[in-house]
Length: 316
Image 1 (spheres, rainbow, N blue to C red):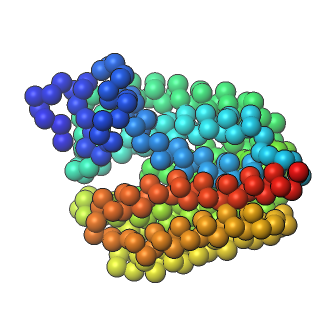
Image 2 (image 1 turned 30 degrees about the horizontal axis):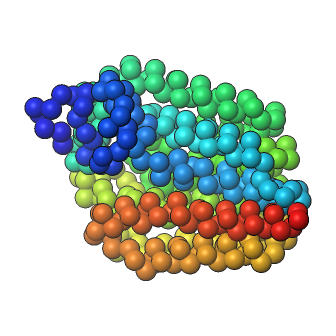
């Protein structure tokens, strides 16, 4: 929690990355907004981006292209950064009372008084506008598909109050890009994209369960639900099932496209990384859980690299 003698506009957030460029280089007035959109924690937009890039690469393989469309990859990255920031801002607006009661989050900009709710709402709209501009660069079908995701995004912050499975709703929202990459390439959604979407949902439930173990004591006190609390001491078994099913669904998606050894090798490396997470997890070590959660960025690279290599070799 920030020291009371420290000015509100320069106070750090308890769970923020220390020494990040956003805190060192941005003007003091801009720092609370950087924290609202979690600018110092890129892992969030990486996890939102991976299903988009996987789907784009898988579609490139299916289309016989030599590599994923670079412009689409850039647009998806910009959109992921903007919409992840918008989602975090929206979540902080909705959860401001809960955040004030949890040690790790009570120093976030809204409960700490660094940003008013009205200012946060304006910032949310600006980020959403950037996401809309990105979406409008795609075909009509993809635009409609992207807009359809907003319903799931809107209800997610409330799910932790009514279900033990808020991570599943997060999966529905964060994995939407698995449909989008294919829709942007082909103007439709087909079975390989649906299988990849299912795989991404299962993967998301797994990694966010690991993340939720950081807050399980506070969550239990304030009445917030999560799969971390639901699985408890059975978390390793639950992760084995979730991650195993995710890899199986990804294998189905790749099989539908008829991939060769590069994509299969990428999937095997991805599966090995998830197996390492399962073996390494200690649910009573918050720092260790955070490290494992963040390592999913690297897991995403493994699968993506395999798909890109597959497209390149097939198109050569």
